[in-house]
Amino acid sequence: LKFDPNDEGGDNKEIELEFLGKDSMLFKQTIDFGSALYTENNGMGEQVYENFKRFCKKKKVTDDVFSDLTPTILNNHLKTIMDGLSAKVFRTYNASKTLQDELMKTEEAKGWKRLTAAEKVVEYNNANREVAILCNHQKTVSKAQEATLDTLGEKLETLKTQKKELKKILENMTNGKKKKIPLKKNIKEEQEKVAKALEKAKSMKEKAKTKEEKIAATEQDEKAKQMRKELGELKFTQNHLWEKEPSKDQVVKKIENWKEKIKKMELNIKHKDDNKEVALGTSKLNYMDPRISVAWCKRNDVPIEKVFSKTMRDKFNWAMAVPPEWLFNEEIAKQG
Image (cartoon, helix red, strand yellow):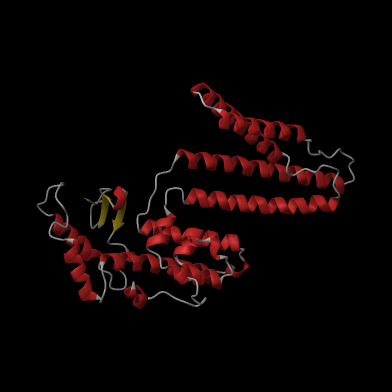
């Protein structure tokens, strides 16, 4: 814990908190207890700041700030404020209320009804992320995640280039320019090679008995998979083309399709990038009341599978019957 971490002096009431939370996840945040967020509407931000100073007085940096507080004492105190209130209930209530408040904000925003289901899911994930940040549900960014983002970025650039090519084809057709329209290359031969390589790898793995045979089978398998990957990349680079010369209407239709593909890819990249350091699933599974999400999906014509995986749908089967107008409140929080 550090007072006035930026050495601003004066009446600064900032505190930097840094500690290991649940599952040894680092929590590091600077909080300004003198800001309007903590002082308006009878907020006790300044009192909390003074309490922190008092608790830390004459203590070493290695001493506990709350040296006399135990979970039992805290839970007993919370029960005097509200029947059934505990640290766990408080955390669950905070998570559920934050999700509901964030979702309500988006639903009340201008143009909400015009959004597609995919765009609404992005807003849901943004609300979910606010809850995950509140609960300090972090995760380490893996090399695989970074590689996925890089690959998606490259695919997005390819789609944009393809859209430009399609627009140029349409422009030439509209202006009557008789330029040769590029067509798809025949990749039947490459497909057959890949199929044979995969079959060979499978056969070698089934027959391999010695160490040398197993190594050779693994090498063949890796080679076949690399060939399959390269074939997939080749297909992707010419997906916007036709096997025979298209009509003007076909080109117009494909341009519209590519606009949708680009939009969807951009949303996907944004979602993965925004959430790469945040574990959304933890708050969904353990802290947010699932009925909030179910009611939100029903109100906004979003399929529940867009926000809950099959595992979650099975676990929260009991929540699926709530009506669209269902709302979370303090009484529901007390029920657990």
